[in-house]
Image 1 (cartoon, rainbow, N blue to C red):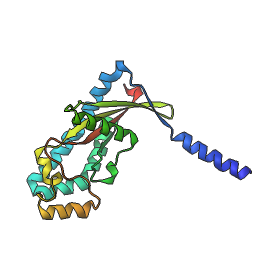
Image 2: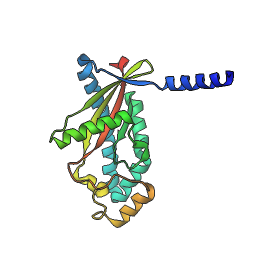
Image 3: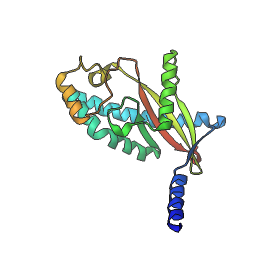
Image 4: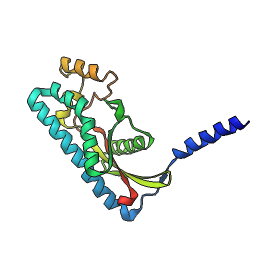
Length: 197
């Protein structure tokens, strides 16, 4: 009996430690959250775009795929250190499984998808989450597919066959193809502790 109680106590403690609840975003802080989130997400996007453009000029799409697979996560970590905020790119049609959305990110993705269906695209979405007694704000910046993105993310039937094979070799469960220019691609999520706002 004592062993059972101990086991259930440990399970309760572990479950209790992982408790996350959605709370209201304070209206008076929304603009500040948006400013910090926008600055951090743009810093990441400019860094990644710069690396990809350099790679495309140096070695074409093959080189760009190498940068995505080998440098994108490291560059994201670098920007996290520079800004002091947790940052992630996520989408339902991910290439790297590390970019799989959690349930709150999925909610944000659905928010943008629903708005796109109605012909609108909000510039951001914000959530407030209470994580074990500490509130964090999640800022989401939507991303759209640009023409240059279609080289690696377009219709596989229209893409270079060798490039398609290379992508499949690096990402066997790739979902990030079939896009057209202007499609909703996903989001950059910036997590900001409430005490930094």
